[in-house]
Length: 538
Image 1 (cartoon, rainbow, N blue to C red):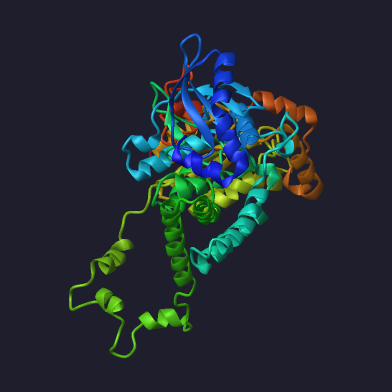
Image 2 (image 1 turned 90 degrees about the vertical axis):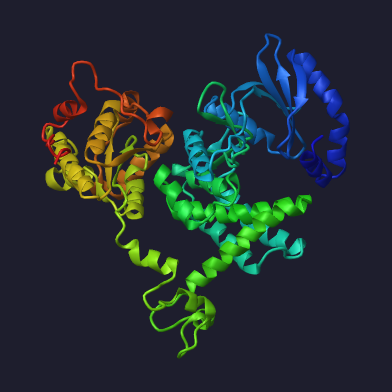
């Protein structure tokens, strides 16, 4: 038994010790019934005994047996919902004995020697492949349901202060207050209609490389009905050590199209909660690493909140400010000295001269009722981007979303405007829906020709949720939409081509145009007749 699993069993008292004593018999029974040969033990996790296995036909596999009180049902549900991508493929399972037989994967991401930023991007992209709708309300075929983001946030807000007191206040009160505030913000922001399946524990040791591939698969899913920011927050809190800060949140936001503030709030709550949980299990060294980062970030947040604004400044900040000819040593180090200035000051002075960041075209993809326009507004604010939504033009101008073919004409002109904006260095959110893969490929190619990057932002939606949202919008804001019958919704779902993982991968190559077309600009000019095909070259 590994030391980490042993700590978890000791924390469960007599129940844990009884499970340890019965483990050899449990393993022997599973090996006989499933016709598998067990091999070496695999260490790393805290809540399961894991060992190599080989099936009767020679297929390499992994046997995982969860300890008591671990979230086995949620893990099993998440594996079945994911269907083998991006989570490990499920071969067999036994609910009463809390056992799983899974495909055997390659080395973890943490063992590949990749730099931290590359690990961060790989984890985010892998997690994003798993964000998909779950049954209405998170209900499962077994009768249970996945916990929601609101419930997870509420648990953090309750667990953190209570455990902090019980453990003798091992981190600052400021860290606890900030963590509880972050958890409360995520509880208040929870929207069941936009929630998806999230892993809940993505880190560099849970992402294993698939043999013969550059892709990764995730193991040990927590299984939550939450928001994508939850997964990304966990990645920053414990996925890649030492990367949690506001800049990393913005980087993940740009990569995935998720709001950086939501990422930050989940990350900080998970950071403090993880540190206290690990300390309660008895691992003081690991807990200290989490809580030290939490204290540092909380102190930084405190100073930023009370930075100079107008004439009023917090006393702590005034201590660092000039007082006559006497200044704090740290301030003097940064002050001009003749013609020589501190390197940090010179960098700040030159920041305004730096070349602006590359413009980006964000392609909103999804059916009516998926929440595209709401997400497009958020992205436009986060990226300071121009947002172009055809419905906001069609209905006021023509009173109809189609108006005898005028929509294609309008879309062509909006795309022309988008390309001009991209060439000027302004990012654009194109809120078109883009049901076809060819439409998305053409726009990605035009964006590249305009010197911009592009990204597909896909919002899946369950049919029942879609119908409920459409009905609510028609009842509360009929002037912003148009009538849609159930037959329309069903037909649209058959026509819609959902993007796959390859298409959503950032920087993915654009496939060639359909047969008979010399290039994507020509295809796009046929699809949108009013498109100025020369705009991408000007």
